[in-house]
Amino acid sequence: MIKPYNVTKTVYKVSDFITFMKSNNLILSPIFQRRSVWSKGAKSYLIDTIIRGLPIPIIFLREQKSDLKSLEAKREVVDGQQRIRTVISYIAPNLLKDFNVDRDEFVISRSHNRDLSNKKFSELEDDIKQRILDYEFSVHVFPAGMDDREILQIFTRMNSTSYGLNPQELRNAKFFGEFKTSAYNLAAVQLNRWRSWEVFTEDNIARMNEVEFTSELVHFMFNGMSTKRKKGLDKIYEDKDKEYKERNEIERRFQTVMDSIDDIIGNELQFSPFNQKTWFYPLFGVIYDSHFGLNSSLAKKTINKISSSIIKSIKDAEELIKQRKAPNEILGLSGRRTTDAKTRKALFDFIKSGGQIGKGAKHSI
Image (tube, rainbow, N blue to C red; front, side, top):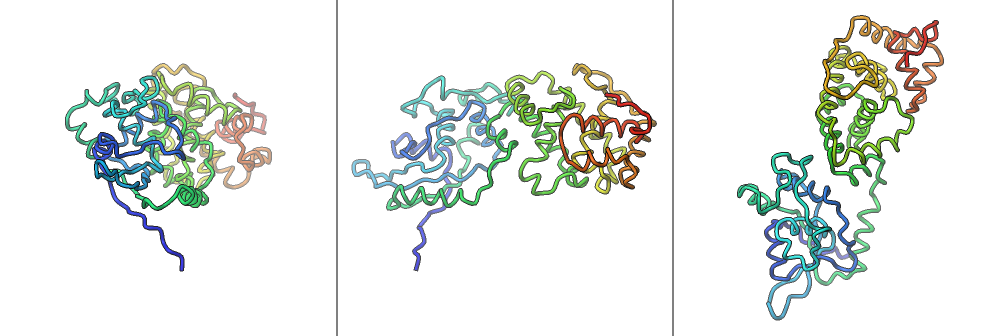
């Protein structure tokens, strides 16, 4: 009979890890752990997560033989080194023997917490300090008798059922600044709409597809219907990571367009072809154009009212698509589920013209 592993499941407070470090009873960097590579943004994001009391992935430790001089138990970090190192470098950097100012020193970013931005631990209010110190990590502790080979086999087994990361999940792991924070907030505010309109399934949402699509719509506000979808998104995440001057205006415009979509067609969108991303994107574009104008300056401006003729065009185009009476060229393009600029422009023109493309109307973009 296979003997089960004896793994202890417990919780440790942040203050417990500080105590372990003070007494030299925590081995932070065992040989099979990667070196600390987290960016300052990732570290700030972790501290803000702790302050908000949100869950963090499980930390894995392994018991070591007790110290015969101090008569105390020792532990080593099997998985979670960067999380523990981050909280220690923020709270008590003197406890890290290899502390390096350039690598390890950081403050809370404004994009993560405006009230606490640029503050060190010593500058926080006492209640916030207490909240951090009392935060509980879920911890699994392997017994001392478990060797490195068994540890590696366990993590191989854990990772064998994991999905490969999609492009948006990779962005989520790489960026922690202004643009990412804004895109995730925008997508979260619209979550009930994404669901009720059935633009995204729960599986889509679990894999951050709605965040990626939100990012595409924001990218459209900056650059129009660009052809370089993945490269374009990667670039805007990078370019706007530290400084995002247009953030407030972009967020205002995005909310305005989504509210208008809800007003015009929201009650029936789940039954409409517009709940397909291929059609939702140009629909968003038509309404954005009506409110603000394509390629307009991102300086704050008055919101133009959508004319009754544009609303009629949207409804007419929708009906033609539903009844499969749109030109074969348009139906063929929409059926590809492609994201190239030419297709999106053609679908944009079809909606804006009320389905007159192919009947003598010229493309407007």
